[in-house]
Image (tube, rainbow, N blue to C red; front, side, top):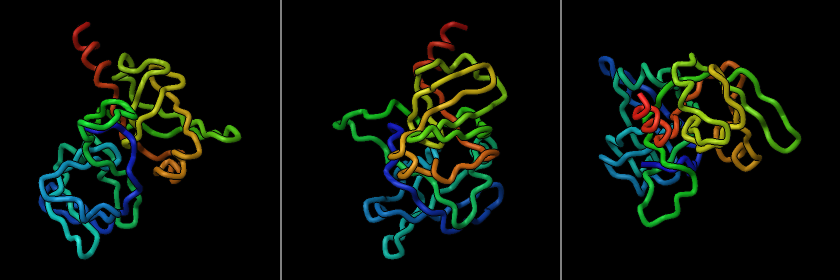
Amino acid sequence: MFTGIIEEKAKVLSVSEEGTNKHYTIACSFVSELKADQSVAHNGVCLTVTSVNAADGCYTVTAIDETLKRTNLKSWKAGDEINVERGMLMNSRLDGHIVQGHVDVIAVCTRIENHNGSHLFVFENDGSYKNLMVEKGSVTVNGVSLTVVDVSDFMFSVAVIPYTMQHTTFSNLKQGDTVNIEFDIIGKYVARLMQ
């Protein structure tokens, strides 16, 4: 479980393929605290640490074909920055919202507006999850816990404060980029019960 509060921007050092899997070697400041089998969210995708090279300040995770099909990981390349967050501690405050690291859908950034101190990001998806978002509800975009500003059947928007812009990969996001979306888990359970 995660909170959607990003610890830092990490860097993809290399990408290699093995069958239908992809191995990503990642550099970040907390590598010395990691161990194999630990879960880390990468742009909102929960991946298992498969090896740690503390001397070189990097670790490796593997994404299987199913993960590559459902997320934007397939487009990652060496040099890309990604948002990372370790699993939440049960004795800490829940500052964001409950995030599982299980991406529901990919969305496309269609508009970015500078609002003189904050930025509004507009995203579009295929509408298959239109009942899972509500105005002023929670959503996770590339692992970042955010509040929905507006929502319709095929689009939604979020407002991003300067701190979040600076400390996450929102500062690198461009119109046309794809992002990983995880809808609020409570909304998903309610929608399922209503069926």
